Every structure is written in C-alpha cells, then in structure tokens.
Image 1 (cartoon, each protein chain N blue to C red):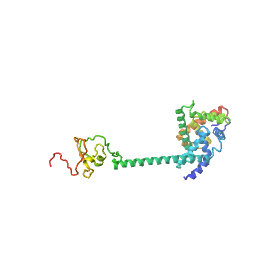
Image 2: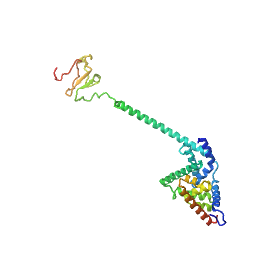
Image 3: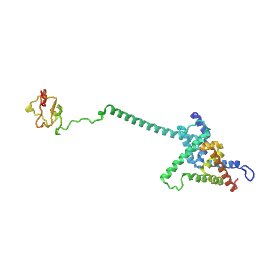
Image 4: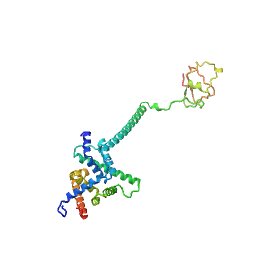
Length: 157
Length: 169
C-alpha cells in the first residue's frame, strides 16, 4: 500500500505511531518508573504475603493437631470427657429400684442418717463398709449392720 | 534460568515492559505501574515461570497483558458491585486517558487509534512500537496467527484510511 507520493504507508505509519507512543511515555516520572523501585516494592509485597501465608499455615497446623489429639483421646478413653461423679445430695430422698450400695463415707456425712452416739456408742468398727438397702426399706432410723451380715432373700440357705 | 539472570534480563526489558503495561491500560500512568509491579510480583513468587518456549520478551509481555486483564476485570466488578457514580465502566476510561495524554501531541493519531478495537490497538502497538513479529504478537495476545493477521490488516487499513482523510499520511 502506498500513499499519493508513492511512499509505502506501512513505514510512514510505523514512524508516526512510534513517535506517538514514545511521546506518550514522556510524561512519566522516571523515579516512579525506575526498575529497582518497582522490583523492590514487588519483593516487599511478596515477603508480606508469604509471612501471612505462613501464619495461616501455622494456625491450621495447630488446629488440626489439636483436633487429632481430641479425636485420639475420645477413641482411646471415651470416659475421659464424661462428667465427674459428685457427692450426691445428702438431703435428697433415697429411692432405688434395685439394691443400693452406699459407701460408708456418705452415711457418715449424711444428716438424715445421723449416728446417735449416745444410743449406739462410739465404736464404728462394727459398721460394714457398705449398707445394702431395698426399695421397701423405710429410712426412719439409722442403719446399723454387722460386718458379717449376709442378706437372705428367701432363696434358701 | 536463575533468578538473578532473569532479573537482569527483565531490567534490560524494563522500559519496553513499562510502555506495554501502559498501553494495556490505556496509558494510565498509575494503573500501568501497578500492572507492571503485579507482573514482577508474579515472577518473584513463581506464579509466572519462564520455561523458554518463547523469547523472554514475548513471555513477559504476555504476563503483563494477562495481569492487566485481571486487574481490569476486578476493577470492573468492583465498580459494578459498588455502583459508584460511573456512567461508564473501566473499559471506557482508557480511551479518555488516551485523549488526555495525547491531546497536545498528535490528536489525529489518537483519534485514529481510538477508533480501533482494543485488540487491534494492542496488536498495532506490539507490531509498530515494540517491533515484534505478528507471530510473537499473536502469542502475547493468545490468539491464532490468522486472527492476528486479520486484526492487524483491518487496523492498518482503518488507520491509513482515517489518517489519509485527515491529510496526515
């Protein structure tokens, strides 16, 4: 393609466009467009973002290790998270459907099962370690059982 | 290629890269510098890796172009989601910036370039200003060589026509 004077348009166009683009670049402050400055800024951004990434990774690791530990505890010792047995309320009425084994310490601390020392004496050695009760037993007086007491439910013997 | 060598080569390409980055964002200085910085960041963090399949210039120009497109897309979304007082989106702004920056220079050329599509503008810039071959330009633009040839020819014809009418050529 040529112009009216027979010169190739491509070359002319190229020259004009090149001048145009070069002129467009002239308005840029060389300080802002300095390679080292732009590269340095990019490096700073990279450092900051990699630090952030590492922090996130660290937290994810801590969280997953914690979860694994928790799962392991639950699998190996499911009772580890069960509520701790507390001393039962001594004032609450005792009612059971089956025979109850009441530890001696509870009987000692119980107000309703207070030990009348004047009547029974102060010798606790005769008390058994456990007291066996059934539903139909009325708790209207202290329980005192001999250590060699063996209940007989009418099954012979 | 080792990083220091790559850095040295990028440094030697810097002024051309800057011109290309500016061209990709319609000669808006701040945006162009941001695009170039993001492109360097991609090289530093390894998200853009030079594998030697093309020349370094072609590869880095393509990284710049993709970065500019990503930024355009995100700004467009931001502006449309936030619904600021823009009647026109980001894609209209390069044309305005081109006018502003070249008003005192060559208004006829600016007007002629403005009439081209964005793809044609980039192709003309790559071929005429950065002196790349059409094959390289097509690779940077990620288009087929035949498509690039068609765009280039149409752009050249349109430019010649407009500039001849203005009695410029």
